[in-house]
Image (tube, rainbow, N blue to C red; front, side):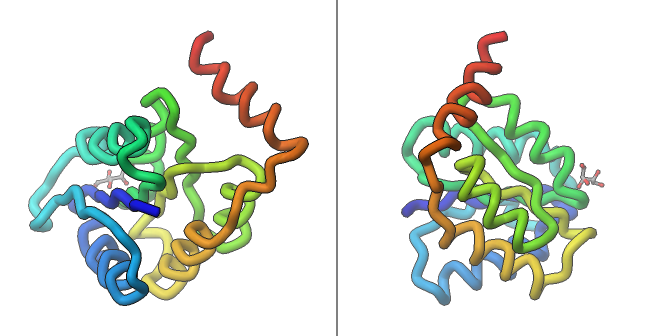
Length: 146
Ligand code: RB5
């Protein structure tokens, strides 16, 4: 599994915690920046990760802004992306099991570090259930053509 990670300035500190966690756990990941806490626009950062995942070069993405809202809306504009904004572990598990989400969005001003890492762990470890969820995910993706 290859993971693409990015944030805006509001998510910068939490991104550092998450990349440290991914490194410690031995995940294969790439940090798409930013490399400082200077202001950047979340759509630009969302695009980097969304393109990386949509292209197939990366399996999953993790994106962080202040609320997680702007960066998740932005990522979901890119074809092939199913970005889920999660603030609890259950939602992160269901985002994978039922929705086959390929990008996790977090709000650094919403969740603390401990909860954020638990959400990341749940998201990365939960598998898509398939079955009855297949056609729903397919219908969801067909909405891209409306
Ligand atoms: C930046 O101040 C903030 O607007 C951004 O991180 C995010 O919360 C937007 O959705």
